[in-house]
Length: 313
Image 1 (cartoon, rainbow, N blue to C red):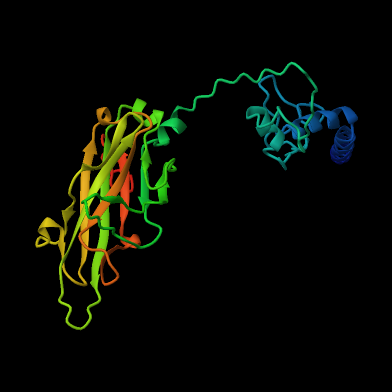
Image 2: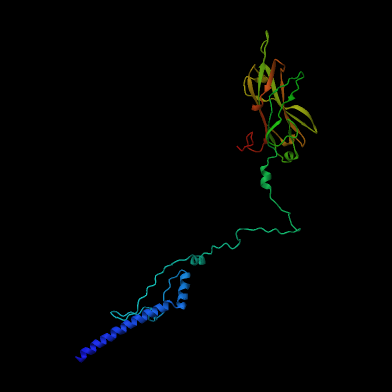
């Protein structure tokens, strides 16, 4: 009986001891959790996006290898505290690896004016591209209105209207292409492309008979050291194969063309070129008229493969 009583007393003592130990451990754990030093350690890890794990033996006893000491089937094992990671990666931890800060300006931007009298504005600017893009030779002209083609008893051609600049260099002389220093010094030959659209009209009265007209076109040249040569380059080509000798029938409309290259050696600075014409008849009843809308004179650099609008072919 005595042994049985002692055994029961021991069981009670052990149970009370275990309850006390657990209560103490829980109290110690709560006190440790509230310990400012432990909280500071936890905060440091949490701010850096890391999982905090306690190595305080008062909370979880560990061996020298860092393993938690647990005894199988033991009733006095320490409480196993599992700390979940509520934040795995913070922006701060990423920015420490990749620095994306803009360290040169602050916004909004401000300006500051510094007064100084010693400003060096001697700038060496390369304008080669702009200069090359400016074609000093190209020009395209046309008549501003329809005009009759004059006749002459002595066979002298007269200049025709070419006063409207469509593109390119501005005329220095009305109806004429002027040779500037830039054109001459370029060493380029000139290509003249001319198209003249014209028609012949007759207003016949009683007893009048229809007559053909004749029309001729030329390129003229003049200059400070040259006399005026109205037929410097003679005879244009006619679109109508039956218009040989410049013939044109009543109410007929024709096109006349000239495509010619003038060498750089053939002109000097201050020379002018123009278009002249000569009609066989020019009266109130019989006359030939140039159609301005279908007529042009284009001057381009002969070394360039361009059309009459100076577009590269």
